[in-house]
Image (tube, rainbow, N blue to C red; front, top):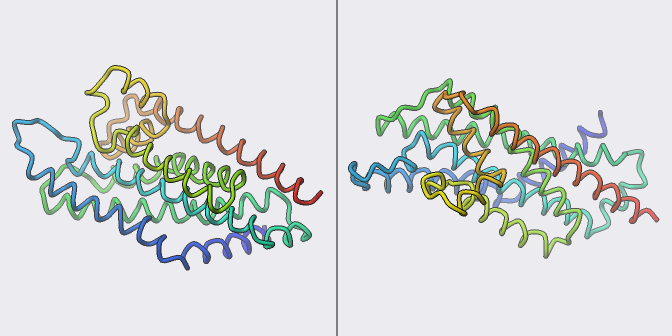
Length: 254
């Protein structure tokens, strides 16, 4: 456990040392909250468009913010692999489980903090514009988003294990864009229907966003299926990341 905590502390410091982590993981989501709220105020009431209303927007923006943790996890792993840092650590008593936990735990801690800040900002905006959000619903949403956070972190660990520090970030950028598009953050994919909705419904992003929005609204009828699908994707990607990281570790040691 001491080895895991020490390695986790090092990785946490590495993420916090990068100013881009504050810009993308915290600043950008908060700016988007404000911009989209302003856009929502300019939409005529007769348009009946509620996706940018703060109680719906907050869950989507929170998921969008979590997707950037995938990028920073990928950068952390790929940089360690490209240098000699991990190779030297392989000679230590640390096991592959220690390494994996050491990468996941600090990012998971940051994800909870990031979600809490996003919803706190949403509650402030909600009080200003006169929305329908509640503190209890926001707290539940932070908890509901944990499986989704682990999914993004595991995906980052997987891509960082598979690709170098030049290729991995580009792939993560594509996934971040897809999460925003196919998660229904910026448009009502349910209302769109058709093939586009079928594609969105097959992706974990949509279900993660949907679960967060339902938690905010404290509508729990049907939230279970969205959580189960998100957890299923999380388990698959976590197992894949563990298998790939271990295989790369054995290859480096041989």
